[in-house]
Length: 124
Image 1: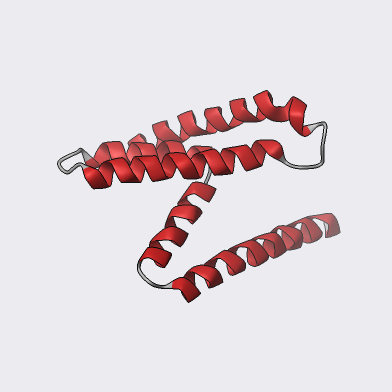
Image 2: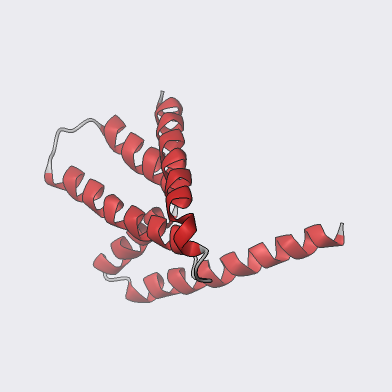
């Protein structure tokens, strides 16, 4: 059942991301700045904070809703929101060095992995 909950939420989140991209694409064309992705990532992080804050403040809420909203909708909208949440949780737990390592390694290795994938496919 949890897979279905995540599946449905991810579809909604993915459609919202696509719609946001369409909406903001005319503004992104004016500059090299990737406005659509930036807006989705920042909005997703804000929404993830609101959702987690809401569930933290209220006990007895169905975990299915949390799964639907966070892993499902927010996961389909942007995984950056999960990255932001994990970073903040590390910081709040006092693991500042680990949080910084997570940030740097995610960005550096993520970009490097993408470049490697592009390079390998261009060889084929």
